[in-house]
Image (tube, rainbow, N blue to C red; front, side):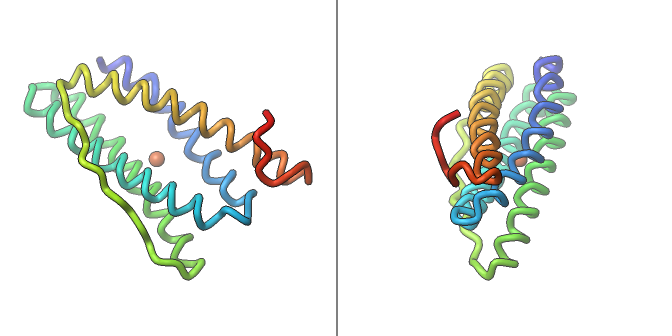
Length: 143
Ligand SMILES: [Fe+2]
């Protein structure tokens, strides 16, 4: 299980950095994207904390520590988005959803699948951001 989580961490962090840059490129949708990102990061933080608690209860202390570390990273991502939203003069909106917590093995599989989906989505946004900065359309779905 540890190898699976280690495998996604570097990939997730680099995607998050690039993901933030893509929001700035699409100025018309910036606030809406920031709010969605803040919501997503806030939910990710809550989900990873719940998974950490479950891993601890199941005796997987190292997995619990890794989930807490990822939760902390998500908290910082949310804080960064929140700071920009406040600078734009908007109110923060986060809809925290109840995290479905299963066994630690299943939780890890859920995380891996979720990260794959988010990575594909983020790459799409990054690509559209590059097009926008080159004057080829602000939100073209073509890839
Ligand atoms: Fe994040």
